[in-house]
Amino acid sequence: MQPIQTRPAGPFAPAERAAVYRAIRERRDVRGQFLPDPVDPAALTRILEAAHAAPSVGLSQPWNFIVIRDPGVREAVRAAFDRANAEAREMFGEARRALYSELKLQGIREAPLNLCVTCDRTRGGPTVLGRTHDLDTDLYSTVCAVQNLWLAARAEGIGVGWVSIFREGDLREILDLPAEVTPVAYLCLGHVRELFDGPELQARGWAARRPLAEMVFADRWQGRSATPPAPSAPAAGEADPIGGRGA
Ligand SMILES: Cc1cc2nc3c(=O)[nH]c(=O)nc-3n(C[C@H](O)[C@H](O)[C@H](O)COP(=O)(O)O)c2cc1C
Image (tube, rainbow, N blue to C red):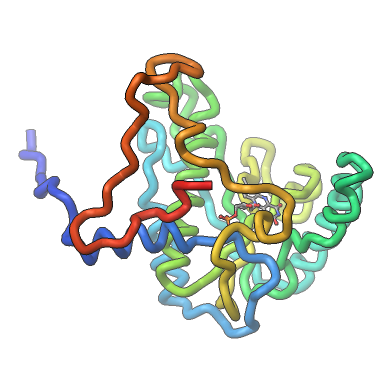
């Protein structure tokens, strides 16, 4: 057996750690602030490499990245969004419909690049290590790739918006996806004029971030610990790492 190479497992240097937390804190879903400036191909490659470095069940790497520049394809995707969005609007009660109509929920035309991240549900064969008892772990792996991509893009100064308001069949047809390939994320990418400080849906009064303390249970569903988890203390000289810990 070849010796397995290892490397030190300690924490990053403070500035490196701060940069990681900054990317997490300042990542935003972008819809309305795209600039037409082209994305540097080298930066796109780095972002795709980050996505491709994601964890995946049994190392199956079930993702593909369809880079979409063709205006005809994008127009077809935009029309599919419009159809689904009209349906989506009707699913909300009357009180929310007006606000829903005002929200900008995609940047398909404005963003210089669109990207569809797919999951090949047959990648790795019929029996994949780790997927034996939960078939959806390939989808979860693909979502890990999307999150890596989103964070790397933030570090590169490139905004990303996730558009999920489609009938799946429409995307399949437009992008020629075979039956075994599921579209997981349709993303709009590009440089941005400015970023919101927090989620746009919060700024527009649609929803609000919840405090972390509401999300953490001890030992079982809704288990309350006698001592709630202490707030994460910033390391010496660092700002609050994630910021959005509170409401
Ligand atoms: C799986 C998924 C699907 C999403 N679909 C849409 C969408 O169709 N349209 C949209 O405007 N935002 C979409 N978003 C973005 C969320 O609205 C956004 O992440 C959330 O409001 C928090 O804002 P932030 O990402 O800026 O922190 C989606 C996000 C995820 C993770």
